Amino acid sequence: MNSVMQNSAIQRIRDKLNRDEPLIVVNVDHPSSSLVEILSQQKIDIIFFDCEQGSIDCESVENMSRAARLNNTVSIVRVFDSKEWVLSRYLLLGVDGLVVPRVDTAEDAKEIVDVVKYCFPLDYENKLIVIQIESCSAADKFVDFLAIDGIDIFFIGPVDLSKSMGYKGDFRVAEVEEKIDKIIELARSAGRHVGILVDNDNVENYVNKGVRFLYTHLNAFLEKGANAFAERTKLNSQLTSSKN
Image (cartoon, rainbow, N blue to C red; front, side):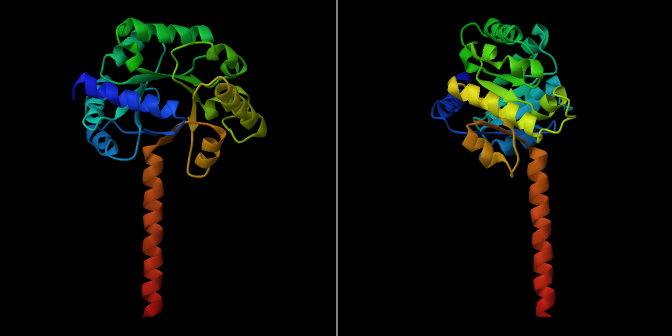
């Protein structure tokens, strides 16, 4: 697939955001090109490679991004550090954008945008930039982040935000939920886009609040599907037994 076709995939993502439509973003969870190829054939907008918490290495990222391009699907990678050499290295592996964790200040966020522009001076707009908001420092100064051009998504990390607030990862505490809602409200008011980790139970609620980058894990899909299938076999077994 040539660069023109892949740029059209990125434009499709931007068009959906401009129409205020939600994006389905799935963390592939495994270093597997064939799995990415299968995912790229589903109703998924962005495939997410996790090099911060997962086992995916640079070579895998390069091959997995190729697999995503086979079906004109956007891929992004979460890096393990915001240092310039780390960002540059992963950008040049063929992915369509970066997810950068642990960004505590607007100044740090601006430097990330500058690195992307440095790596792709002629077409940096064809790269998605996702900045994670996952600390009290970032949350409390979120208005400063909104003043920075070039950031496509502000991605709330609810577990780490909760830890930063002293709640040991429990993001269902009222105070944490209030802070998350405030970030969403500020972003929406500024015409910016926000994302968060979702599941089957809360995704509709977050869509209604205005979240458009809906992040989940392939492993969660597998677990849900396997459990549902197992329940169906029990049901069928019970029906058969009752007939006998």
